[in-house]
Image (tube, rainbow, N blue to C red; front, side, top):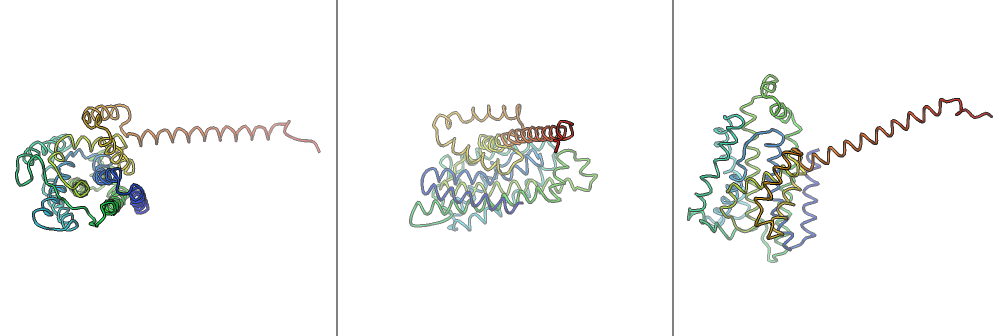
Length: 334
């Protein structure tokens, strides 16, 4: 039930942020929820549809830089800047997606992996984009005289947006379009035989994931109050992949939890933050080799095994009871 799940995600996120108050932990969770908006789109794009597009960090950069520029240079409010940036991400994803989704599988992956290679230096050396230091002074989503209240209410707005993104992703996955996407992920010839428009569906999935990444970038920038070129770099894309694949590439709820937990781990320890790339590479390799569906897949497999054992025990007990009832010794003389 997409709406119910999205509502639960929004409520749980709002309650946790309200409990954390204006603390550093609350700020970290709010940023993690912003990243979770992006990972929700990645579940549909990479996990469910198996579209090998690795441009999510680029569109997060579009959302973050777009929001920062529109607010600090053109005087738009936070809400106006976010909405305008979403429109920019939609147009950009349609243009880029119309080109790159023509390429199959590995070619699409290589084409999207090359995007950060020239966008990151552009952001780093562009004075308009703030060079190495980026853009500061990005306003939160909710302005208030009290910093703690402002942080909590801005985080609640992010939780609501995440709930809407969750509902939208689940709705897509459980619709007729989702059935076509699932068929395409297994066999494109079969999907075409069933009437799926391969080119259209590829573009739609790319746009869906890219727009959610744009929204996630705008929310992260509003939570942090700044944006730097690091959001466009290849390590940022690797971090997003870790958030999705370690938690569970086919589970929306798992991807949300993975985004929040990994964001917390990267900011809670200087040792982890310094060696983040090494830890991420090891974690990704282990997951791909041992359990491609991540923690969610491991939990699901364990749950199925437990239910199977319980069912076998129940069946064995029923057979034993039936045998005992049917034996001559079971009859009791009056």
